[in-house]
Amino acid sequence: MKTKIFLFSIFYFLFSQILFSQKKEIKLPTHPDGSPIFCEKFDLLEKTLPHILDQNNLHNNVITKSDLPQITASNRTEEDVRIGDAGESEFEIHAAVNPYDSSNIVVGAMNISTSGGGSPSLKFSIYYTNDFGTTWAKSPFDGTLPNESVIGGGDPMIAFDENGNVFFTWILLSVNATDQLGKWGMYLAKSTNNGKNWIISGNPIELDTFTNFINLGDLDHAVDKQWMATDHSPTSDFTGNIYLTYVDIETMTGTYNMKVKRRLPGNDFFENGSVIISTQNYALAQFGSVDVGMDGTVYVTFFADTGNDNYGIYLTKSTDGGVTFSIEQKISNIAFPKLFSGNFSIEGIDDNRIYPCPHVVVDPSDPAKIYATWTAFGIDSQVSNGLDIYLSTSENGGDSWSTPIVVNDDMDDKTHQFYSSMAVNQEGVVFVSWYDQRDKNGTEDTNYFMGYSTDGGVVFEQKNITTLTSDFSQISTSNVGIGPGEYNQIITVGNYTIPFWGDGRTNDGQIMVYAAFLNVFEEEEIISINTQFSLEGPRVNPVKNTAVFELILKESSDVNVLLYDVLGREIKSIPKQNFDVGRHTIKLEVDELSMGEYFVTVRTDFGFKTKKIILVR
Image (cartoon, rainbow, N blue to C red; front, side, top):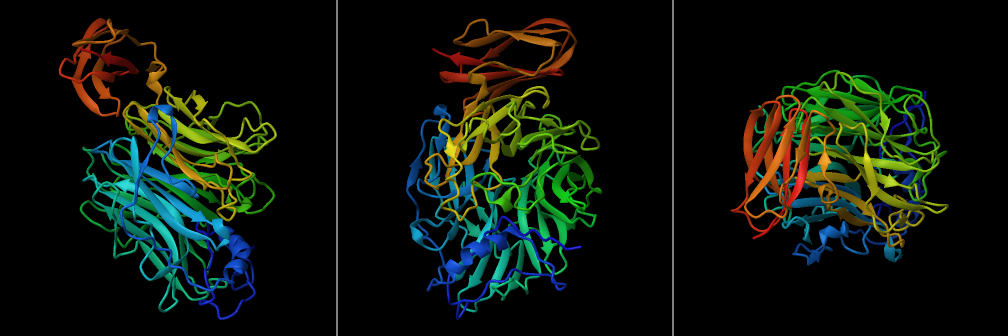
């Protein structure tokens, strides 16, 4: 049986005749038995390499390391705003918020373009804000290496450590300009000033070398699609650990090893050793995702094929800080078109880049509650002619899972919804975002949607969060047919939910980083659905000195009252106390606070309710 090796998400292109003294026939790599290695990268190489081999210079693609001009975003209350440079092709978006200063958010993206008629150029873009998105600046760091010519790369990933420093990991394919040695590496950089400047670690997370630029015949390992998460729990025994999961593909044998590495508190590097979490001999394994519960439990999911296109999503966990992991268990089957077959397509996305892209998130309000989301046509078999967003829930730390539901609520089974991202806020509200083509109406118009659930992922309220659509028939014309990338990111900050995505609304082939600062409490009260309690008030709004609420309990409960500002920062709280059955008056003193809008959340054993107050003088 032919072995299929999927080396993807890292775009392979060569820049010069220095590597090759004359133009050569391109031959796709094969295994020793002659069976082909199926890979989107090789498909892309076939498209781009003939043009690139005609170039006469070797590009280092290193920008001047100086401060770049500040980028002023639109008012965040206007919802979707551009935070990236105009005229760029930036995609595969990842973002993180500083857990110790929520006004500091850092966003990373790939940046690749063929505009101007030249060969493709690849670098990375990092944007940061220190005022909760009112203004953004671009870091001079671009992910390239001194004396290295970039020939491919991808997968920008961001995580904050226990001190508010931020780490960036990425994959880079390069050629040394001196000895012409090819490198396939996963690298690590650190910023101590909120994402402005970065220092690259002298110890790559993974690194392999090669000299055969026609078929990569001497490359032993190809790492791909890493994901990171930090343990920020103040009560965990492993607070400050950063976990990284990725696939290590043994290119000579076709073996897929899903791995996890750790960065320990105080270190500027990941440990050399790793834990292999895929214990079966999968025909394919990819798309690792990791998150950490408030009790320090590490959860990792990945997509795998047990053979003959039997696709599924699997979960493993660690309770000892990533030293050991449980045997992986299947969350769900996934009905999906045969990968790399070319018999299924979405306009604007390369046929070999359409994936299920699963993600896992732990509820910060309940460490035993876990959510997984992915893209599919169905569970055990195809039930729709269009892709949908699926979600499954575990209430017991991943030991068992609910029957997956479809999140998107459109009724047309021929339109596509794909590439979901997910976050859960401190109140347990689940947020999912995705690309959505329900309104294409015979065109390739695509919007970005977000849904939220206050009942543990049973029912989702959802809406289009883009003010202008993107024509996906144009979205990939400037990035060698790649399209928007396989993942975006959604984060939560207090009452705010902030999705980031690659947006092609200019319809000229350029893809820009967009964000939406959404406060779902501005339009309506948000309450977890439960009949055991209700919250009335405030009695007077606007409030001058004291906000007064009435809490009605049908059963006794512990009650906690929290006050947030518009940036999602906790301003003050009333300590948790036990209330008996009946009506209770809650008074929150706010006379020392500045005028403006605030949000009061009352938590009970049965759920929560949040209300907006306006403070005046």
